[in-house]
Image (cartoon, rainbow, N blue to C red; front, side, top):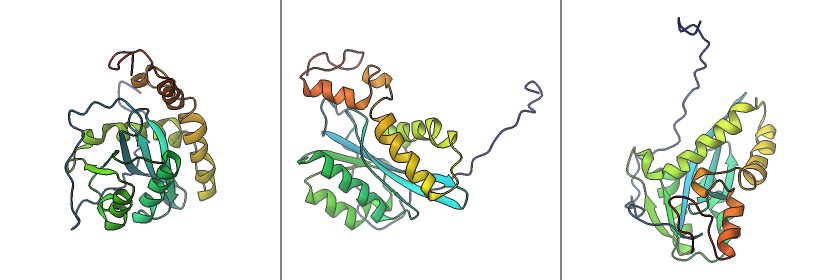
Length: 212
């Protein structure tokens, strides 16, 4: 069957989550050539969809680029500014004073709209956006979404909104942040990597300094 290409291949419906055709200001990419060596230096944000029997839910996340830790997230059946703002507010509540931190996202209307930009300016964050249609400009967020889909979403047959609201928070907080090993972090989970930084040293592995 393999030789004759007769194996079953599941096609997953693609759902557009980025609408960059809007009249809001677009900001340049400030991450090119930047060395990230501490928490709260750069945050990255993105939105994805999660399929359930009756339709889709949308998940917005904010990650700390240094540790890859999920610091803010929100679920909704609507993909709008309220969704992205809710995730950002969670991140701000968890992290406290972050003035000067760079917030990087795609050019989607959820991140370019005035409500979201006002939240960023109010917290003293600096705005950075990826080039249009270039996923490599927000690679860390894209990589996280792939991990989420492959290690959680595709393994569970979500039937209802309640299923998603039960499983996704558990995966983000208890599995991903606490236990999930990252090759980019010297095979440490995000929480452990941040604790190492707080103690004054980093995990030794290629691409990162031994001392902070």
